[in-house]
Length: 497
Image 1 (cartoon, rainbow, N blue to C red):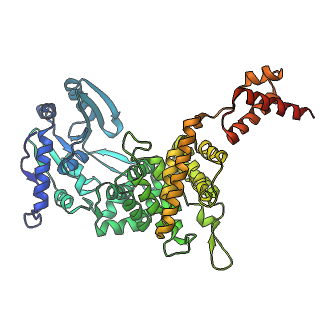
Image 2: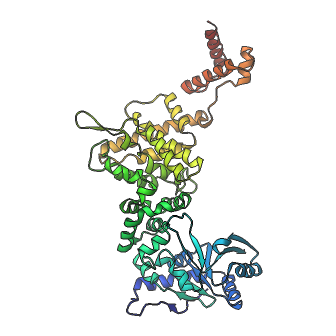
Image 3: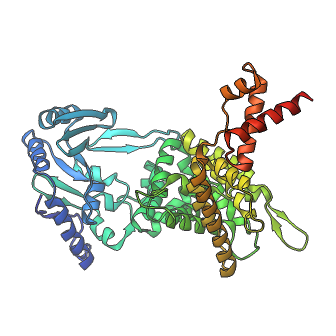
């Protein structure tokens, strides 16, 4: 795909100003399209030979202008699903029915993966959670139902004609999100598009047009008719984006967060424990930014983007509004907000239909995020360090990062002191880990050995002995076999008194 043909744009030249930025984007797209497999052009010729139109649409076109090649290619066609399936069956090595009710058939030929969808329109009934799908007849009509103009561009195959009826290229150059139709109508047709706006702000660094912002603010509650699963999918994409803070701020400003994640705007009213000008909401967004900075590369302990860490960052203080107390002397306290917060985090993530493993991991991090705070005042015993590691379990590396990110003080001396204290804790954890396998601490004697030494049958006493030896291991570290046996016999003798 080495060239682009004429630009199809319904606007007059005066209404369609050419910009240097747009020209740069066009050159980027040419380079990307040149790398596409000849098999893609062949697919276009096959649809044309059968009397049907085929056009590359949506994200792959937008990404091409941004200099990025998409792995999966989305196409729109005038062919009905059964006609598409017949063409793909003859072209591809394998094909599958992705969603016939939505007009989509998928296929693979070599390394080329395609999804082909019949031209369509879709809209929600006022009380429906699922969109109605109606097939359309034209590419322009199909593009008009897209969420934003930057996603309403297409490239016809096999002639490589660039189709841009709504000025998406100019908006892409200007980094602005506009809707092909009126924003009110667009969001009324599919309220999830408001979440997509926030997601694209986070992913692409775009701003939303004024009418889009106004419509989002006026129609935020309409999002309630969309299924939790679809909302969650958009929220996850937003959180895993390069700049999730921007997307979350847009959600809070427009009221979307009040529907999707009400705990986040709820923190705006709660001044933090230092009683400074920043509220807990601003603190939370800063913690999110700092947690992201602490994510690692693919070979590291917490490869970014990490959903669990990012969710924990935005939820770690959700218990503060419910636990806020004004203390004598003008201070503010939030006693046990980590306990309340863990419960609230679990409730919210369940409502958003997150999986059990994610919910458990995030709630554990919220529950444990304050555990370190006593370390700086009094050096922990080895037993306390072991318990910290054992309680964190497989979330230890994330807990390290969440705890460090939670330090947002402007007092550089205090920040340095906290950082050094956590450096010391991590150093002690590493040193202890060299001596014993902290992630799988076991007593020095197993159940069979206990029964043999004490002459016991399986039962409650064996379990009690096991727990006693486990407590000794946590307190003192590993014991020599003779010492462990002596400790066991001493404990057993005490039980007989």
